[in-house]
Image (cartoon, rainbow, N blue to C red; front, top):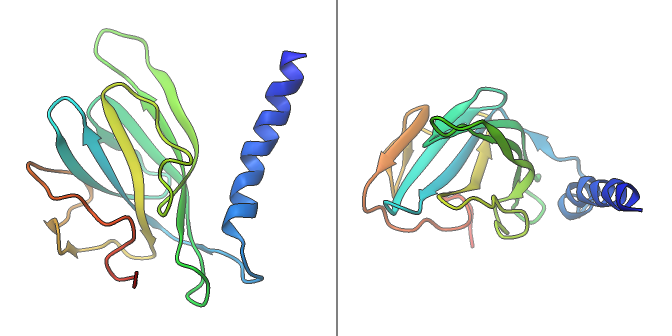
Length: 161
């Protein structure tokens, strides 16, 4: 009985992006870059991660790979969604897949990383790498660590509330 529940649970999880992401008839837009935000709960350090789809980024002991990053067309409600695979590889321990699924910029708690030390969530998707952010200053590819950073808005800065 449990394997069947796992199969139906997986089917339900895979169906969530299709129903939650397609409000209208317009197809979603695939993007090449993802902007993620990460929190180290021990040091309270907030970091901005800009990465290309299918290129790994490192944060703490985790390797993060964005497999897809999609936005809705401008005529629809703003939303960015990314399919992430996160592997934790702590020193002297075996690596483990700690997250594989869709994350939504407007609702980070819907599908969240469950990790005792780190939090990661999607900020935005774009077809070009963002060069500057008003809260973070100049951004580089990979991980940018910024001590004492202010909290970020849940939507990308260029979108109206």
